[in-house]
Length: 191
Image (cartoon, rainbow, N blue to C red; front, side, top):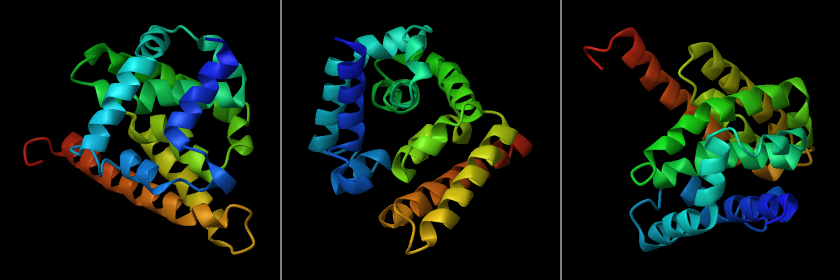
């Protein structure tokens, strides 16, 4: 599969048709784990395993790094390494090894201003490696970036105002995960 068609198929699976930057309801449910126990969720797991397992394995070992030089490719790498492994964690424990690459691609993308070329919906995923990092400074940076994004999309005049609720939901989920992680790190006995 050529790079562009592989990247396109990753984006299509994760974002759907992505009309006007909005995210279909079934994708929102998939993102936030609301369908993890449903038949549709099992279909998504099977789809990820069948269509993306080879790419996840390659990216988890540092392969596909050439994709990071393109904004869509960089986001596709982050999806492969950060989001898709959640579907396969019991079947593919080594997929979590790719998170260090996802964090590296995220940080390199931020330095190259790739994030300025993504929609708010895409940015919620692009920032994910920061939000799920074991490093509290990374998590705080990710939350700060989402807060800025929420402020921008709040305005009715913002071209992606319709994505405001998704950004808000992503921010609240990140804050909740950060609070839980901080509690475990600071006081592991009572957490």
